[in-house]
Length: 67
Image: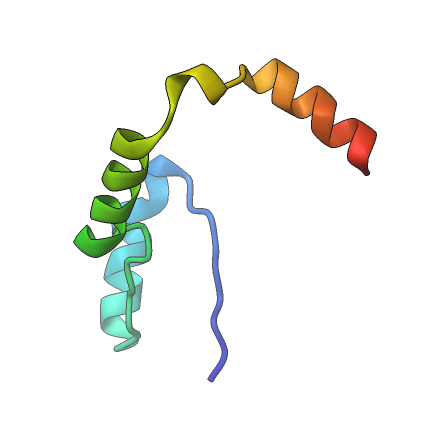
């Protein structure tokens, strides 16, 4: 089965969704994050050591040198 992703301008969304319904196509939502994944992230945040955190700018510099 093939999957197609397409960005639709806001002013055309209603028209596009109506067309999808008429063609009997399936619309899938992929932006939902499972609750189990959210809980894992919450635990990791809670267990993280703030003294070991670095800013995004510092992390990006380190990544550039490792590449």
